[in-house]
Structure formats: structure tokens, C-alpha cells
Amino acid sequence: MTTLSQELIDQGLQLAPEERERFANLLLDSLEGEEAEDPELQAEIQRRWDRYERGEERAYSLEEVMTALRKQAEDRKS
Image (cartoon, rainbow, N blue to C red; front, side, top):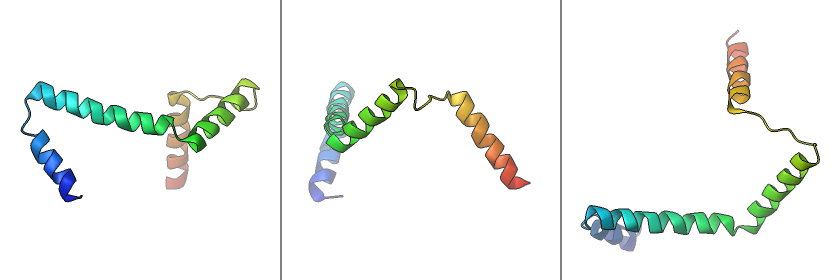
């Protein structure tokens, strides 16, 4: 961590709770914006969506994924 980062953290912790929340949200929002602008990530998301729409890929529910993972774990124990 840089000196500037530590200074910002130290100063941020001195803010009133509502100001800290606003500051934290601004920092989080700035990260979300960076992800959305990553052209490689956007291209991969689009490729996956296109395959799904064409019926080449299938979506799995969380329950299906967890069941498969539990089965794999049990198979490895045997």
C-alpha cells in the first residue's frame, strides 16, 4: 500500500459515518465503471450471451451447480 493510500484511509476514517458511506460508495462505483469498460471482458460476455441465445450454451441454476460439485466431492472421497 502506498503512503498516499494509507493517508487517504486514515483521513477517511475520521469522516462522519454518512460521509464515510458516501466516500466508500464513490470508490466502489469507480471500480464498477472500470470493469464495464474493459473491452476484452465485454467481448467475452457478448460471445457467451450470443452462444446462449443460439442455444449452443445452457444456463445452470445455482442448485444444479452445487449438486454437481457435491457429487464430484463425494466421488473424490470414495
